[in-house]
Picture 1 (tube, helix red, strand yellow):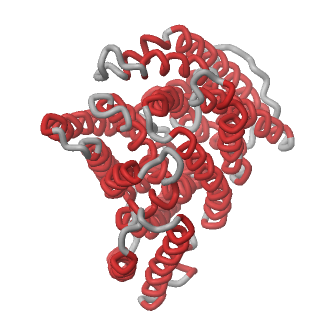
Picture 2 (cartoon, helix red, strand yellow):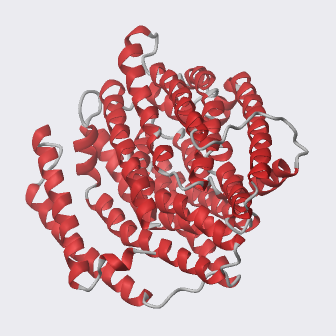
Picture 3 (tube, helix red, strand yellow):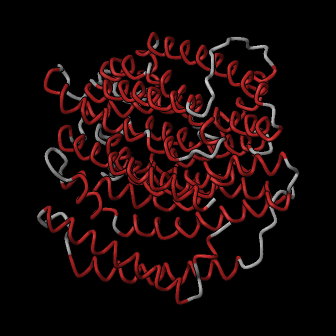
Length: 513
């Protein structure tokens, strides 16, 4: 599992580097103005639906069912279920995409309900939604192919295909922006092209495994009904973070037009450790737990889960500290050029610092959720997710409203704090349910494991804080020096963390499952 996670993380790293290039070009060309905020909304809505019909809810229900059929050794039954699930998924996402395009003006108005009635972002958001909604069809078919490949322990290519997404958006910005009435629309066209490219790469990859799904539509097929029954409760549980981001997007409309863009960039930086490690471990562990549950190996199931929790904490704690301590230097180094100003760097950095609090628990949730899905229990995570979303709405109202009334420029930070605290609550409730149901028994050595992480994290914090104080104001530095000092400080902090872990007895064999 460590090897598979490393492969997934390596491929994801390539994707994240491409993603950074995309964000840097985007920030330089378009800054954080109203049109950029319109794209953020138009992108997040189909992106949230992608979590339902693609990577999130669908994969969480589909992979355990497919893994169970694979474990039973009946390729004919597996092929039949795959054909009917593919047909049903395609039909549903085509209908949803069509309805989304038709209802784009009302959807834009709904998600910008708190914005002024004459806000220019509303009609522009509707235009972009009509471009981005068909992306849902292609990315859902991509997710189906990725789920099949993951079931057969092929993790590299599904993790690498998001590179195509970033490259398509970059190409669209560079080639189309100068030819459109609103240059920011080029990003929406890039998103659509990205969906097409990804399905063209992953769909043939299934054929090389001897698996060629045919689109057969029959909603009454037992396999389709089983996946659908498991999938419905996961709509909330798999996409709780995205729901919280959408809630934040709605409340950000109360604030200055750039608030949505500031939150977007902070969210993108938060996604780096989540994608590299949290999602990697969660993706690898789901088919593993599904096989162990199908084989009634409860001891192995608990041991695999314990391994996943330890690994993500080992990475999640220093990742959170690093992003919090270097929030503004990171933003200034990565994005501050062209139309992205020093004020934008400050605002994004403030939101990133607040969001970093939730990173370890966001990562824990990526491992805890598969523990339920592998047992085909989707109702418990749904109940937890509903509680989390309600808490996020309450926290957002409680934190943002007074800041808005007082005219605090950093009012958007309240949205980031609410999202982070909701993530802490989500992970805590999932862990408590696992313990209460007797599904997970922590292995020995947790006290020593946590102790090592805490001491190493304190050493890393001391090194990073001392270096940052010595360097001074990051935004005032030339670009070359920003990058030079950033890489030096990150390397010094990472070396301090790793060295202390080694001194306290952590060895590579402790990372294996």
